Length: 268
Image (cartoon, rainbow, N blue to C red):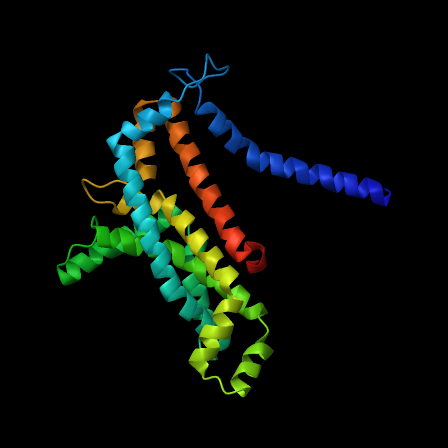
């Protein structure tokens, strides 16, 4: 095959993969405007009523607020814990470093439903030992979502630190900068794209989580994903598509804004 043919084949494959990823999102947004009382093709008309209904549904509003608050806390906590941990894992030399890194990254490979059940059992054991309620509380939910987000921060920041040029830090130190100044003025600015990417991924992973939340959310409290599942049990209309479209808009906007100010491509 000629070089031009290889390029065309590669372009066609890339286009097919991109369409496979993007097309479901386009369909969800499209369906959210259908006037059909039950989701079906073709559309009998178009309306914005499903967005109004989603906004007026208490479970969706309360779930959205809880999901955003939980995701923001998980993002902040994962950065506060993950960035120092990444510095220690990449720049430090201590026995058992590989084991610690594997342990911190384990939540990425454990199935969500298994992790949720394990956390619930662990919280019950803590309650039995300390006589303090953990499962079903906001604190327990925040801890669980921090554990969801932390591996993404460690993975992204560690990769950025490993590829960073140590000579720049050494040059700053040789010119009289103390370690804290080197960290603040050289290291952290160099890995800023990775930190922004870690914050974005942490927020999204926490915001869309269902498996752990369904085990740990307390009575009288819900997340947006749980509210969606509960709604789908008895309804199949455009309200769910409208809520999904809003989530796509939020995540897409966050991605574009983050890339505008931090050039996320440099983090990978």
